[in-house]
Amino acid sequence: MSRLAIIGFVIVVVLVVVALAAPLIATQDVGATDLLHRYEAPSASHWLGTDATGRDIFSRVVYGARISLRVGLVVVTVSALVGTVIGALAGFYGGWVDRFVAGYFFNIFLAFPGLLLAIAMVAFLGAGINKLIFALCIIGWVGYARVIRAQVLKVREYDFVQAARALGAGDLRLLFRHILPNAVQPLIVQASLGMAGAVLSEATLSFLGLGVPPPSPSWGVMLEEARDLSTLQAAPHALIVPGVAIALTVLAFNFIGDGLRDYLDPRQRNR
Image: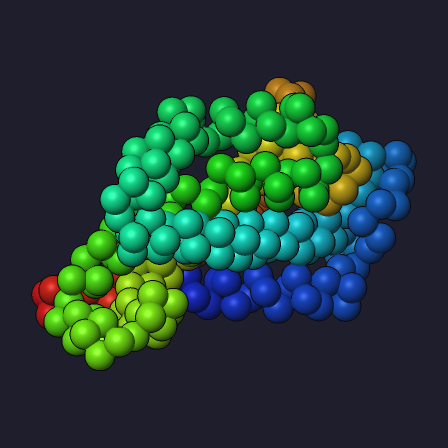
């Protein structure tokens, strides 16, 4: 595996440890305000400084990792499961099923930009982490369905599948025992890249006020609270720290996805 993939894996491991051990790592109460110490520079008592209401930025970034990873994990898991089932059925049965699902159903969701559709859905449903996850799952399953459909269309024509069919294997056995185990490799790469997309979408929607509502320690909320010019001039750390956290997380999952793609593709591995 490439060095970038290893670096991404290390960053993700650190994020997971930080998220799980947040109560032990955080040095301050994430909701405790102290207006006398607002926009303080990094110090021994506040490692990454304070924000507009005197809250500790380090502690908020630590707990923000929990929100980002929770959203990403749930969205990827649900989207991958739903997309795998729909895409596998469309690719396996073909015919009118495939024409309806791939020709019409997919195109309905692909006709709109993903983030724009998510904004519209969250605006309709209201702010909240559960509603945000639901909206991202609704728009996220199509990518997984397209990937698994293409793989199933290819694998179902292999000789070992035709041999199993000739021996009397039923549809469910063919699909779940012979086809899907040989078609899920691209789905692993898609899931890794999907984690990066989900984290970035959560931060974007929270920044716009349509995701996790304040005062939750979401990285997007922290960016929104520190986005005005006076804050950037007086306390640039309040904007830079959550921005770096988002960038590192997205880059880490993208590095892992690229590394897995190269590793699972024999042509790339040989190269």
